[in-house]
Length: 156
Length: 156
Length: 156
Length: 156
Image 1 (cartoon, rainbow over the protein chains, first blue to last red):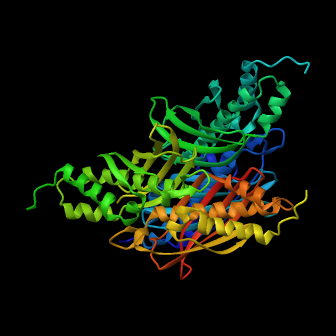
Image 2 (image 1 turned 90 degrees about the horizontal axis):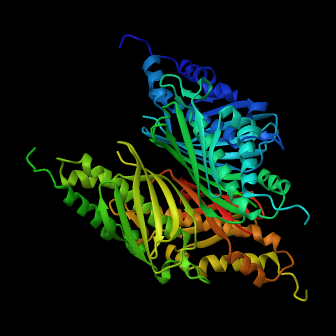
């Protein structure tokens, strides 16, 4: 192959750009990727009027929580492709990442989504070459755990 | 009690108005309630650029699907309060409905979210006076099943 | 290839024998396969003292229910390999089936497991060449729905 | 009330005896309670021929894993009733515990159930007066994580 291997950092930059800027609904959610490495990801977002679920208590909509956790899980699962892609091209990596998909998702809502800024994090629990299982957590800005999730993702 | 009992239709109208107009994130999703009766609900929404998850395939974001299914499940669970509220006031009903919350949610993504208009429907599987379990389905405009979900809701 | 293709009926017989007789814990549960075809399976079992969970109410242990639903889902997922195996040998099929595994399982317990004889059934919701998603139901002998489940299975 | 308050240790002893000796299917599984305190529980069991799921690899049946995790979650959820019961009688506590039930359960199978002795542990994630959410883990005797689960339990 003529092309030189793409550095890991470039693949991670591609993922970050994809998740922050090129997936439209992630922009609707206002997601910023604050940490990204093989096997782990962190995402931050702020409350905004259009993300409210309970107009009385001004808390996050449960669907915002499930959506952010799903996206964080997909991003974490995609980092697993970085190592597999060593020596390949950025185009190949981009094509692989496009095919990552959620098979199923469970979310446990532990406390009302009250706060200003929220952080979702993902860690790999099972890393296969077909399927990855990711555990996700959502914390508020004072590190209170608001929700946890588990997602199963098709990765190959 | 001095106030006359509120007709079921008024309670359902309250629920519909709440879910369509007064929950901000449901408006972000563009949800319209197309059917509502004790034990069942149907919700419709159209694809819009800001709901896209896969910019290559122009399909719905998985988080849109989980959010709509969660909201449809919450609406269906809330219809269970209509019968319980017979003889009570609209204010009491509104207060009860505000306390309905998702405990946990599972979504199975069966096919890519391709299409123009989508319908989510909910049916009651378990109706307790503390907890309700609702099954949700998402179909495209040609009745192809795209995703299913199950939600457990605190209702009392 | 020298060996003649194995008829579908023989592959299904292999599956039935495996699930009824050669998986030890299925014998502990007392499972009998009562229907089996590509994409669907039914399993029957009777209550026995060692399967009781609630000694006061003499109902099935929740773990018996989850175990039977998991096994029924695995059997249903394995029937999907029957068509794929057309033209192959029984040994190849047996090897494939040994690798089918549950990735994740959700069970919703709807009513207490009261009764004499129970039937678990599985239907395919998603049939991929890597992953299958199966929905399972458990009914008592009067067709009352006691529990539902969803399992994601690795099939290739 | 004439009866003196029952010490916490006696309530925990009651729970241990119930889960080890008086729930028949827990005996089928061979469960021993090795740690028990308000909010947490640990259970140990050994592999036995009748608990095998894969006759080729001699691994635990997935249904054994789901059953042990469900029972461990129920036990952990029941410890939450200990504090609530301060000042009540043992009979009241026993009656409360009998009504604890699993609403739903998710199990993620991370690695094959290979080993000799297994430990399941439960921790409380959400402790309400109606519903508790428990996270469970299953490790082998070398502390390798084999499976995780989440259960939602009705506790009042």
